[in-house]
Amino acid sequence: MRGFLPLAILIAAISPAQTNTPAPAPVTNVPPDAAVLTINGLCAEATDAAARPANCETIVTRAQFETLVEMLRVEKDPQARRALSTAYPETLVMAHEAERRGIDKDPRFQERLRFARLQILSQELIGQLKDEAAQVPDKDIEDYYQQNTGEFELFSLDRILIPNRTQGTKQGSRDEAAMSKLAQDLRARAAAGEDFAKLQKEAYDAAGLSGNTEPKPRLEKMRRHALPPAQLSAFDLKVGEVSAVINDGTGHYIFKLVSKETESLEAVKSEIMKTLRRQRLEKMVHEIQQPYTTDVNHAYFGMEGKPAKN
Image (tube, rainbow, N blue to C red; front, side):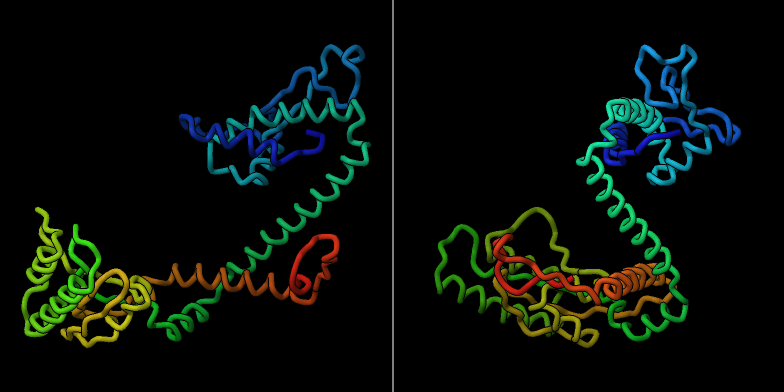
């Protein structure tokens, strides 16, 4: 196995094949040193076709191929392995011909190789940092849960939506005023204990939005981020309490808090783990980048503002 490996070409070749029928999983009883790919006619050295030995071949063993598979992160995708078994030999052949022509000695190639090395080093570092960030102590998870319990509260709410104006009419203060008054009336009846589904149907009828579907005002097990900012006060209600009419550009809203509970640590542990991993990784990257700054020549780039800082 030899030659410079252009990852972008291989990945591009693999991707389209992943939409086809999945290939069977590789046979695991093949010895590590056994050949899994044999490229006939491809010599170990970049020679002219006329000087190529008759029995020239390049062999890729199972161990070599699986190292490549692991690097490209396709080890769990049998179909991608099959695509790679085609793309990799084609890439080796093209790289072999490029070397025969001396392209690998060209300054342009050398500069691309230098930049590719920087990219790969950066990617490998990020991979290493991800592995380090993934080692989240259980105590950190428990502390995050205790300090952010509000994030894991679940609310069940009943809601009535009263549109700002009726359907099929021109915008006018009288129409909007009538719907606003209706919202206040429905709110008073909701606070008196009337059924929210019944009140919601009346609101739709008044707005000309009646349909065959029975209104379902119940919003089950929502977190605080599930409502827009103007409606977040609904989560501060006491169980059984009905909100004042909340007005925003989309209509008038009336809420009743039906129930409130907090998810257990066990139920949200995986979610917290992902959050802490992301935070730890961001912190690691920031600590690496923070000591360095970049001064930009605005006369060249035509950029405005202060010099960029990394």
